[in-house]
Image 1 (tube, each protein chain N blue to C red):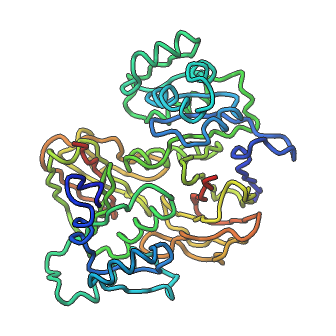
Image 2: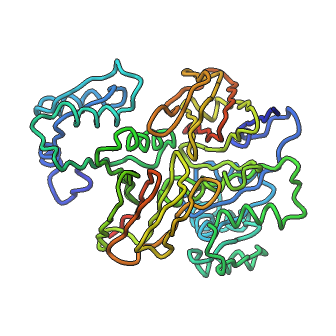
Image 3: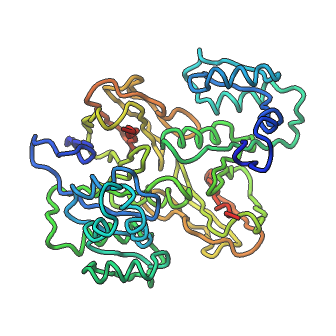
Length: 256
Length: 196
């Protein structure tokens, strides 16, 4: 079984120089922007807003960079594209970015998939200039708010399970650990942890084994209605996970 | 609580909105808050020895086992502040619904509510449209559902399979004032709460 390595280097002020860095793409959803959005924006090669996510960038980015001039921030933090069914983005926001050269991709005809799903598919299929050999898609504003939205976003991780997609909020991040690999998660303890968990959200797990957690699992069964690893603690700087089931990994993000 | 009742006197509010008990591992509650309520007669139940269950789990078990004066023939437990924040906390709270699946427990946030629809029953959900909806969803958390059938939704399910990685009913819409659901799997029902 192949090894898959994970790292939250994108939360660091500068990406460490220990191996080829991933290409980051950022998708902004329609929730209050996490306070580290300017940082991940800077690391990303491609920035997309999903529908009302454009309102969020327009309205809230100046507040996250309060030392800078608001108009200047709006002009600099310009998404490459705004995509979705366009039922939330304000007309003046769409015009503002369109005038700056942002691509507007109206998918209002497609009511079968969520805005996030459309954005991931767009990144996968319609971005020939983006180096996808080591692509990692960061999704800001993916959690909190309406639970059905949150679950829809989590389902996108499962539907695009061969792609690296990380859901981000102010409080934590979530990504998939596919059962097809064993996993090494490198903990950036200056920006994340110590609270973490492993969640068999779609299907029970007959056997999961971990190292590096306060309460490690050892060929342990996990399922809803029984044991789920929540309120766990990372002990060192490396966690390993091997499971017979797709699991969600979640870790808290530090408020500095 | 004083901020949510801004027209009233803050101290008066604090005295009136007195919990019957404060329970859990006590690693977050401030000492002066605990003393304030203890002096008003609130029961303090320190469970810091038990690190195997969440605070919500302890509270549900307390309600079930240690409240002889509470009529439990038609009990419904409402949980405020159950969603948002750390995802592992949220999932731990959702798991409590599954672990106490014979009890009615509703998780609440500003934006929505969630409760379990056990597979052992077919369900009628009466919609209070002045305060909830129209956005809703049905989620097969923990295990796939081979067959779910609904009425009353914009996109009804008809012996439909649902699972993570495939179809899950999210961003659905309630059409009338009654939804019915029947499934071979435990499902989570979620509906938006109106901001009035």
